[in-house]
Image (cartoon, rainbow, N blue to C red):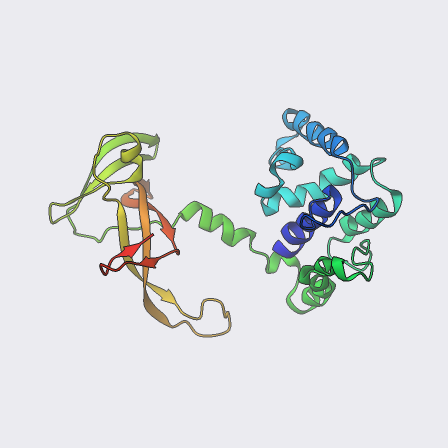
Length: 279
């Protein structure tokens, strides 16, 4: 998924816009399109947003303005739906036909235009992802179609779950400062623990209803140390996680109300001289 839709498409787009190389080297190849042409392409994408049928998915964003924030799904639609008609008669035929071969197969790299040109200053174009795509056919033969191995389903689950933290059964805890979230849930700004302590949230801080910054938490959870190795049996260990509580919510599912917290986790932990952790 990332190899085809994010890495290769993103690097090729940077080559076409003249933004691939660092300052000091001017890429004057004919595949670099003029800024006015890209502005025209971006405006065309923006103008058709309201006319895109829902079954085609998310309407396209202006690639010139938002390519740095493109997700895999957006790169997928750019490659397969929008790139060829928008680049037609705007790009040199040799480069256009090379890209058309990529669009048709999405997994064949040997028909892409060669950007290295045997020059030392262009060695940075020899990206590993360009080589890896040559092995896509072998991967499909060994493991089946791409839909069996790509990460769309897992990323969708991660987006929906947001690392929810559940309270223990039988613990008397209460939420304060409710706000309607949806017909099935309610959003809260503070948690009253069973010990009588309040824990705030960034959401209530933004509303200026709570003066103290007391929404940073440490959670100790079990994780599978071999999660990256599918064939190894799981082995669970305790691991510390630091983060800030965005807000709390209750959510009803299958007739049962769950108490949840939306936590923004962080990995940038800096030890402090006072035996505290800073992030």
